[in-house]
Length: 427
Image (cartoon, rainbow, N blue to C red; front, side, top):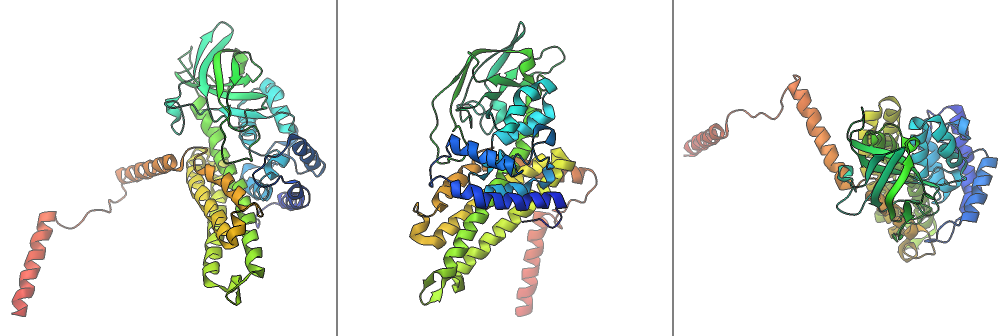
Protein backbone atom coordinates (compact mmCIF):
# COMPACT_ATOMS: atom_id res chain seq x y z
CA UNK A 1 0.00 0.00 0.00
CA UNK A 2 1.00 3.67 -0.23
CA UNK A 3 3.14 4.19 2.89
CA UNK A 4 6.16 6.11 1.62
CA UNK A 5 4.77 9.55 2.47
CA UNK A 6 3.32 8.67 5.86
CA UNK A 7 4.55 10.74 8.82
CA UNK A 8 6.74 8.79 11.22
CA UNK A 9 4.06 8.54 13.91
CA UNK A 10 1.40 7.28 11.46
CA UNK A 11 3.80 4.72 10.00
CA UNK A 12 4.56 3.55 13.53
CA UNK A 13 0.81 3.19 14.20
CA UNK A 14 0.41 1.25 10.95
CA UNK A 15 3.15 -1.20 11.88
CA UNK A 16 1.75 -1.68 15.37
CA UNK A 17 -1.76 -2.16 13.93
CA UNK A 18 -0.42 -4.73 11.47
CA UNK A 19 1.22 -6.67 14.29
CA UNK A 20 -1.86 -6.45 16.51
CA UNK A 21 -4.14 -7.78 13.77
CA UNK A 22 -1.85 -10.72 13.02
CA UNK A 23 -0.91 -11.63 16.58
CA UNK A 24 -4.14 -10.95 18.47
CA UNK A 25 -7.12 -10.53 16.14
CA UNK A 26 -6.65 -13.26 13.53
CA UNK A 27 -6.34 -16.04 16.15
CA UNK A 28 -9.68 -14.87 17.61
CA UNK A 29 -11.62 -14.92 14.32
CA UNK A 30 -14.88 -16.91 14.36
CA UNK A 31 -15.35 -19.76 11.92
CA UNK A 32 -16.10 -18.62 8.36
CA UNK A 33 -19.70 -17.44 8.12
CA UNK A 34 -20.18 -16.94 11.87
CA UNK A 35 -20.54 -13.61 13.67
CA UNK A 36 -18.12 -12.08 16.14
CA UNK A 37 -19.40 -12.68 19.67
CA UNK A 38 -19.84 -9.75 22.04
CA UNK A 39 -17.49 -11.18 24.67
CA UNK A 40 -14.71 -11.62 22.09
CA UNK A 41 -15.35 -8.11 20.74
CA UNK A 42 -15.04 -6.64 24.23
CA UNK A 43 -11.83 -8.57 24.87
CA UNK A 44 -10.27 -7.50 21.58
CA UNK A 45 -11.21 -3.86 22.08
CA UNK A 46 -9.63 -3.90 25.53
CA UNK A 47 -6.49 -5.40 23.99
CA UNK A 48 -6.52 -2.73 21.23
CA UNK A 49 -6.68 0.00 23.87
CA UNK A 50 -3.79 -1.59 25.75
CA UNK A 51 -1.78 -1.77 22.51
CA UNK A 52 -2.64 1.90 21.77
CA UNK A 53 -4.15 1.13 18.35
CA UNK A 54 -7.81 1.72 19.29
CA UNK A 55 -10.09 4.08 17.33
CA UNK A 56 -7.51 5.42 14.84
CA UNK A 57 -9.97 7.89 13.27
CA UNK A 58 -11.23 9.43 16.53
CA UNK A 59 -9.74 12.68 17.86
CA UNK A 60 -7.40 12.20 20.79
CA UNK A 61 -9.67 14.24 23.04
CA UNK A 62 -12.24 11.44 22.72
CA UNK A 63 -9.77 8.62 23.29
CA UNK A 64 -8.69 7.89 19.72
CA UNK A 65 -5.43 8.09 17.81
CA UNK A 66 -6.28 11.35 16.03
CA UNK A 67 -5.22 10.20 12.55
CA UNK A 68 -6.27 12.76 9.89
CA UNK A 69 -8.58 11.49 7.16
CA UNK A 70 -5.97 11.65 4.38
CA UNK A 71 -3.94 9.05 6.29
CA UNK A 72 -6.72 6.70 7.38
CA UNK A 73 -6.25 4.28 4.52
CA UNK A 74 -2.97 2.71 5.60
CA UNK A 75 -4.40 1.99 9.08
CA UNK A 76 -7.85 0.87 7.90
CA UNK A 77 -6.34 -1.51 5.35
CA UNK A 78 -4.25 -3.12 8.08
CA UNK A 79 -7.39 -3.43 10.22
CA UNK A 80 -9.34 -4.86 7.27
CA UNK A 81 -6.82 -7.69 6.80
CA UNK A 82 -9.13 -9.49 9.24
CA UNK A 83 -12.93 -9.29 8.76
CA UNK A 84 -13.21 -8.55 12.49
CA UNK A 85 -10.23 -6.18 12.64
CA UNK A 86 -12.28 -3.01 12.27
CA UNK A 87 -14.61 -4.12 15.06
CA UNK A 88 -11.62 -4.77 17.32
CA UNK A 89 -10.25 -1.28 16.59
CA UNK A 90 -13.73 0.35 16.77
CA UNK A 91 -13.55 1.69 13.22
CA UNK A 92 -16.31 -0.46 11.71
CA UNK A 93 -19.43 0.77 9.93
CA UNK A 94 -21.85 2.26 10.79
CA UNK A 95 -20.23 3.50 14.02
CA UNK A 96 -17.13 4.89 12.30
CA UNK A 97 -19.21 7.08 9.95
CA UNK A 98 -21.46 8.23 12.77
CA UNK A 99 -18.45 9.15 14.93
CA UNK A 100 -16.98 11.20 12.10
CA UNK A 101 -20.23 13.11 11.55
CA UNK A 102 -20.92 13.66 15.24
CA UNK A 103 -17.45 15.11 15.68
CA UNK A 104 -18.06 17.59 12.85
CA UNK A 105 -21.71 18.53 13.43
CA UNK A 106 -22.90 17.69 16.94
CA UNK A 107 -23.16 20.20 19.78
CA UNK A 108 -20.84 19.76 22.75
CA UNK A 109 -23.72 18.32 24.79
CA UNK A 110 -24.52 15.84 22.00
CA UNK A 111 -20.86 14.84 21.74
CA UNK A 112 -20.72 14.06 25.44
CA UNK A 113 -23.95 12.08 25.34
CA UNK A 114 -23.43 10.15 22.10
CA UNK A 115 -19.89 10.47 20.73
CA UNK A 116 -17.95 9.81 23.94
CA UNK A 117 -19.43 6.32 24.65
CA UNK A 118 -19.41 5.48 20.94
CA UNK A 119 -15.72 6.38 20.63
CA UNK A 120 -14.95 4.35 23.76
CA UNK A 121 -16.67 1.27 22.32
CA UNK A 122 -19.14 1.09 25.22
CA UNK A 123 -22.10 1.70 22.89
CA UNK A 124 -23.02 1.11 19.26
CA UNK A 125 -25.16 3.12 16.85
CA UNK A 126 -27.04 2.92 13.57
CA UNK A 127 -28.09 5.25 10.75
CA UNK A 128 -31.74 5.31 9.66
CA UNK A 129 -31.91 6.31 6.00
CA UNK A 130 -33.10 3.36 3.90
CA UNK A 131 -36.86 2.71 3.69
CA UNK A 132 -39.13 0.11 2.07
CA UNK A 133 -40.16 0.88 -1.51
CA UNK A 134 -41.21 3.46 -2.61
CA UNK A 135 -39.21 5.18 0.14
CA UNK A 136 -35.59 6.21 0.21
CA UNK A 137 -33.02 3.71 -1.00
CA UNK A 138 -30.45 4.61 -3.60
CA UNK A 139 -32.51 7.78 -4.13
CA UNK A 140 -32.55 9.72 -0.83
CA UNK A 141 -34.96 12.26 -2.33
CA UNK A 142 -37.68 9.58 -2.04
CA UNK A 143 -37.60 9.93 1.76
CA UNK A 144 -41.02 9.16 3.28
CA UNK A 145 -40.31 9.32 7.02
CA UNK A 146 -41.76 12.60 8.33
CA UNK A 147 -40.96 14.70 11.41
CA UNK A 148 -43.58 17.21 12.49
CA UNK A 149 -42.86 20.14 14.81
CA UNK A 150 -44.79 19.92 18.09
CA UNK A 151 -44.54 21.71 21.42
CA UNK A 152 -41.06 21.20 22.86
CA UNK A 153 -39.77 19.01 20.07
CA UNK A 154 -40.66 16.80 17.12
CA UNK A 155 -42.89 13.82 16.38
CA UNK A 156 -41.37 11.35 13.92
CA UNK A 157 -43.38 8.82 11.94
CA UNK A 158 -41.92 6.36 9.46
CA UNK A 159 -40.50 2.95 8.66
CA UNK A 160 -36.81 2.25 8.08
CA UNK A 161 -35.25 -0.95 6.80
CA UNK A 162 -31.68 -2.19 6.38
CA UNK A 163 -30.77 -0.16 9.46
CA UNK A 164 -27.30 -1.63 9.79
CA UNK A 165 -26.17 -2.23 13.36
CA UNK A 166 -29.57 -1.50 14.93
CA UNK A 167 -29.89 -4.66 17.02
CA UNK A 168 -28.12 -3.78 20.25
CA UNK A 169 -27.44 -0.16 19.32
CA UNK A 170 -27.93 2.63 21.85
CA UNK A 171 -29.21 5.22 19.38
CA UNK A 172 -30.09 5.85 15.76
CA UNK A 173 -29.45 8.89 13.59
CA UNK A 174 -32.81 9.15 11.82
CA UNK A 175 -33.31 11.00 8.55
CA UNK A 176 -36.81 12.50 8.26
CA UNK A 177 -38.50 14.96 5.96
CA UNK A 178 -39.42 18.28 7.59
CA UNK A 179 -41.44 21.30 6.49
CA UNK A 180 -40.08 24.84 6.68
CA UNK A 181 -39.84 26.08 10.27
CA UNK A 182 -38.87 29.69 10.87
CA UNK A 183 -35.74 30.33 8.84
CA UNK A 184 -35.16 26.61 8.23
CA UNK A 185 -36.00 25.39 4.71
CA UNK A 186 -38.19 22.47 3.73
CA UNK A 187 -35.98 19.43 3.37
CA UNK A 188 -34.63 16.62 5.50
CA UNK A 189 -33.43 16.75 9.09
CA UNK A 190 -31.27 14.40 11.14
CA UNK A 191 -32.44 13.40 14.61
CA UNK A 192 -30.60 11.61 17.42
CA UNK A 193 -33.10 9.03 18.66
CA UNK A 194 -32.38 6.78 21.63
CA UNK A 195 -33.47 3.23 20.86
CA UNK A 196 -35.15 2.93 24.25
CA UNK A 197 -37.53 5.73 23.18
CA UNK A 198 -41.12 4.45 23.53
CA UNK A 199 -41.97 5.67 20.04
CA UNK A 200 -39.35 3.58 18.23
CA UNK A 201 -39.52 -0.18 17.78
CA UNK A 202 -36.95 -2.63 16.49
CA UNK A 203 -38.56 -4.82 13.85
CA UNK A 204 -37.71 -8.01 12.05
CA UNK A 205 -34.14 -8.64 10.99
CA UNK A 206 -33.15 -8.97 7.34
CA UNK A 207 -30.96 -12.03 6.88
CA UNK A 208 -28.14 -11.13 4.53
CA UNK A 209 -25.04 -12.85 3.24
CA UNK A 210 -22.60 -10.63 5.17
CA UNK A 211 -21.74 -11.10 8.86
CA UNK A 212 -19.14 -8.45 9.73
CA UNK A 213 -21.46 -5.64 10.85
CA UNK A 214 -22.60 -6.18 14.44
CA UNK A 215 -26.34 -5.75 14.95
CA UNK A 216 -27.43 -6.97 11.52
CA UNK A 217 -29.77 -4.99 9.25
CA UNK A 218 -33.21 -4.80 10.94
CA UNK A 219 -36.38 -2.85 10.23
CA UNK A 220 -37.14 0.09 12.55
CA UNK A 221 -40.63 1.51 13.11
CA UNK A 222 -41.23 5.05 14.36
CA UNK A 223 -44.81 5.71 15.49
CA UNK A 224 -45.32 9.27 16.75
CA UNK A 225 -41.81 9.05 18.20
CA UNK A 226 -41.30 12.21 20.26
CA UNK A 227 -37.84 13.75 20.58
CA UNK A 228 -36.92 17.06 22.17
CA UNK A 229 -35.56 19.99 20.20
CA UNK A 230 -32.03 19.17 21.33
CA UNK A 231 -32.26 15.88 19.41
CA UNK A 232 -31.80 17.73 16.11
CA UNK A 233 -28.34 17.00 14.72
CA UNK A 234 -27.04 20.11 13.00
CA UNK A 235 -29.67 22.44 11.58
CA UNK A 236 -33.26 21.75 10.60
CA UNK A 237 -33.73 21.18 6.87
CA UNK A 238 -30.06 20.50 6.08
CA UNK A 239 -30.04 16.73 6.51
CA UNK A 240 -29.17 15.96 2.90
CA UNK A 241 -26.16 18.27 3.12
CA UNK A 242 -25.00 16.54 6.30
CA UNK A 243 -25.57 13.14 4.72
CA UNK A 244 -22.79 13.95 2.27
CA UNK A 245 -20.51 14.86 5.19
CA UNK A 246 -21.06 11.33 6.44
CA UNK A 247 -21.49 9.27 3.27
CA UNK A 248 -18.44 10.53 1.33
CA UNK A 249 -15.91 9.37 3.93
CA UNK A 250 -18.04 6.34 4.88
CA UNK A 251 -18.00 5.05 1.31
CA UNK A 252 -14.24 5.46 1.24
CA UNK A 253 -13.60 3.71 4.56
CA UNK A 254 -15.55 0.72 3.26
CA UNK A 255 -13.09 0.70 0.34
CA UNK A 256 -10.15 0.83 2.76
CA UNK A 257 -11.36 -1.98 5.00
CA UNK A 258 -12.34 -4.34 2.20
CA UNK A 259 -9.12 -3.61 0.33
CA UNK A 260 -7.32 -5.00 3.37
CA UNK A 261 -9.39 -8.15 3.02
CA UNK A 262 -8.53 -8.31 -0.69
CA UNK A 263 -4.85 -8.23 0.26
CA UNK A 264 -5.46 -11.16 2.64
CA UNK A 265 -7.25 -13.05 -0.15
CA UNK A 266 -4.34 -12.49 -2.52
CA UNK A 267 -1.89 -13.67 0.14
CA UNK A 268 -3.91 -16.88 0.57
CA UNK A 269 -3.82 -17.42 -3.20
CA UNK A 270 -0.08 -16.70 -3.40
CA UNK A 271 0.64 -19.17 -0.61
CA UNK A 272 -1.52 -21.76 -2.36
CA UNK A 273 0.24 -21.55 -5.72
CA UNK A 274 3.69 -21.48 -4.09
CA UNK A 275 3.41 -25.08 -2.89
CA UNK A 276 0.75 -26.53 -5.19
CA UNK A 277 1.88 -28.43 -8.31
CA UNK A 278 -0.20 -29.16 -11.38
CA UNK A 279 0.84 -30.93 -14.58
CA UNK A 280 4.40 -31.29 -13.32
CA UNK A 281 4.93 -27.61 -12.53
CA UNK A 282 4.41 -25.33 -9.53
CA UNK A 283 1.17 -23.40 -10.05
CA UNK A 284 3.02 -20.10 -9.75
CA UNK A 285 4.82 -20.94 -13.03
CA UNK A 286 1.62 -21.62 -14.96
CA UNK A 287 0.54 -18.81 -17.26
CA UNK A 288 -3.16 -19.01 -16.33
CA UNK A 289 -2.37 -18.67 -12.62
CA UNK A 290 0.05 -15.82 -13.33
CA UNK A 291 -2.69 -13.99 -15.25
CA UNK A 292 -5.08 -14.25 -12.29
CA UNK A 293 -2.42 -13.06 -9.85
CA UNK A 294 -1.33 -10.16 -12.07
CA UNK A 295 -4.88 -8.93 -12.55
CA UNK A 296 -5.44 -9.04 -8.79
CA UNK A 297 -2.27 -7.04 -8.11
CA UNK A 298 -3.44 -4.47 -10.67
CA UNK A 299 -6.89 -4.25 -9.05
CA UNK A 300 -5.35 -3.78 -5.60
CA UNK A 301 -2.85 -1.13 -6.69
CA UNK A 302 -5.38 0.91 -8.67
CA UNK A 303 -7.82 0.75 -5.75
CA UNK A 304 -5.10 1.89 -3.35
CA UNK A 305 -4.24 4.82 -5.63
CA UNK A 306 -7.81 6.05 -6.05
CA UNK A 307 -8.42 5.77 -2.29
CA UNK A 308 -5.32 7.88 -1.62
CA UNK A 309 -6.43 10.56 -4.09
CA UNK A 310 -9.98 10.64 -2.73
CA UNK A 311 -8.86 10.88 0.90
CA UNK A 312 -6.64 13.84 0.05
CA UNK A 313 -9.54 15.56 -1.69
CA UNK A 314 -11.88 14.96 1.24
CA UNK A 315 -9.35 16.82 3.38
CA UNK A 316 -8.79 19.78 1.05
CA UNK A 317 -12.05 20.00 -0.94
CA UNK A 318 -14.86 17.96 0.68
CA UNK A 319 -17.30 18.60 -2.17
CA UNK A 320 -14.88 17.30 -4.81
CA UNK A 321 -13.86 14.51 -2.45
CA UNK A 322 -17.46 13.39 -2.02
CA UNK A 323 -17.88 13.23 -5.80
CA UNK A 324 -14.61 11.32 -6.15
CA UNK A 325 -15.73 8.90 -3.42
CA UNK A 326 -18.49 7.71 -5.77
CA UNK A 327 -15.83 6.78 -8.32
CA UNK A 328 -13.73 5.10 -5.64
CA UNK A 329 -16.73 3.19 -4.30
CA UNK A 330 -17.66 1.78 -7.70
CA UNK A 331 -14.12 0.89 -8.70
CA UNK A 332 -13.06 -0.61 -5.39
CA UNK A 333 -16.23 -2.60 -4.74
CA UNK A 334 -15.94 -4.27 -8.14
CA UNK A 335 -12.15 -4.68 -8.05
CA UNK A 336 -12.13 -6.16 -4.54
CA UNK A 337 -14.80 -8.65 -5.51
CA UNK A 338 -12.69 -9.73 -8.48
CA UNK A 339 -9.63 -10.22 -6.27
CA UNK A 340 -11.49 -12.48 -3.83
CA UNK A 341 -13.16 -14.36 -6.67
CA UNK A 342 -9.82 -15.03 -8.38
CA UNK A 343 -8.34 -16.25 -5.10
CA UNK A 344 -11.20 -18.73 -4.81
CA UNK A 345 -10.54 -19.91 -8.37
CA UNK A 346 -6.86 -20.45 -7.64
CA UNK A 347 -7.70 -22.47 -4.52
CA UNK A 348 -10.15 -24.71 -6.36
CA UNK A 349 -12.55 -26.81 -4.28
CA UNK A 350 -11.02 -25.62 -1.03
CA UNK A 351 -11.79 -22.06 -2.07
CA UNK A 352 -15.55 -22.65 -2.03
CA UNK A 353 -15.46 -24.65 1.21
CA UNK A 354 -15.17 -23.44 4.77
CA UNK A 355 -11.69 -25.02 5.00
CA UNK A 356 -10.51 -21.59 3.80
CA UNK A 357 -12.23 -18.28 4.61
CA UNK A 358 -12.44 -17.05 1.01
CA UNK A 359 -16.10 -17.91 0.41
CA UNK A 360 -17.00 -16.01 3.58
CA UNK A 361 -14.93 -13.06 2.34
CA UNK A 362 -16.86 -13.08 -0.94
CA UNK A 363 -20.10 -12.89 1.04
CA UNK A 364 -18.75 -9.88 2.92
CA UNK A 365 -17.58 -7.85 -0.07
CA UNK A 366 -20.40 -8.62 -2.54
CA UNK A 367 -23.03 -6.45 -0.78
CA UNK A 368 -20.72 -3.43 -1.02
CA UNK A 369 -21.82 -3.00 -4.65
CA UNK A 370 -25.29 -2.26 -3.20
CA UNK A 371 -24.59 -0.74 0.23
CA UNK A 372 -23.93 3.02 0.39
CA UNK A 373 -25.78 3.46 -2.90
CA UNK A 374 -25.99 0.89 -5.68
CA UNK A 375 -23.10 1.10 -8.14
CA UNK A 376 -25.53 1.78 -10.97
CA UNK A 377 -26.78 4.89 -9.15
CA UNK A 378 -23.22 6.11 -8.63
CA UNK A 379 -22.40 5.51 -12.31
CA UNK A 380 -25.45 7.56 -13.30
CA UNK A 381 -24.27 10.41 -11.06
CA UNK A 382 -20.68 10.12 -12.30
CA UNK A 383 -21.83 10.35 -15.92
CA UNK A 384 -24.06 13.36 -15.23
CA UNK A 385 -21.25 15.17 -13.46
CA UNK A 386 -18.88 14.48 -16.35
CA UNK A 387 -21.38 15.80 -18.92
CA UNK A 388 -22.13 18.88 -16.82
CA UNK A 389 -18.46 19.68 -16.27
CA UNK A 390 -17.66 19.37 -19.97
CA UNK A 391 -20.60 21.55 -21.00
CA UNK A 392 -19.55 24.26 -18.56
CA UNK A 393 -16.00 24.13 -19.91
CA UNK A 394 -17.17 24.50 -23.51
CA UNK A 395 -19.58 27.29 -22.55
CA UNK A 396 -16.65 29.06 -20.88
CA UNK A 397 -14.55 28.96 -24.04
CA UNK A 398 -13.01 25.50 -24.32
CA UNK A 399 -13.04 24.37 -27.97
CA UNK A 400 -15.85 22.02 -28.97
CA UNK A 401 -14.04 18.93 -30.25
CA UNK A 402 -16.76 16.89 -31.92
CA UNK A 403 -17.26 19.03 -35.02
CA UNK A 404 -16.65 17.32 -38.36
CA UNK A 405 -15.74 18.99 -41.65
CA UNK A 406 -18.75 19.46 -43.86
CA UNK A 407 -22.35 18.37 -43.40
CA UNK A 408 -23.55 14.80 -43.73
CA UNK A 409 -24.87 15.52 -47.25
CA UNK A 410 -21.59 17.16 -48.30
CA UNK A 411 -19.62 14.19 -47.03
CA UNK A 412 -21.85 11.86 -49.05
CA UNK A 413 -21.35 13.94 -52.21
CA UNK A 414 -17.59 14.04 -51.67
CA UNK A 415 -17.40 10.31 -51.18
CA UNK A 416 -19.42 9.75 -54.39
CA UNK A 417 -17.18 12.16 -56.31
CA UNK A 418 -14.06 10.42 -55.06
CA UNK A 419 -15.50 7.07 -56.10
CA UNK A 420 -16.31 8.32 -59.62
CA UNK A 421 -12.75 9.68 -59.96
CA UNK A 422 -11.28 6.35 -58.89
CA UNK A 423 -13.49 4.45 -61.36
CA UNK A 424 -12.49 6.78 -64.19
CA UNK A 425 -8.81 6.27 -63.39
CA UNK A 426 -9.28 2.50 -63.42
CA UNK A 427 -10.85 2.60 -66.83
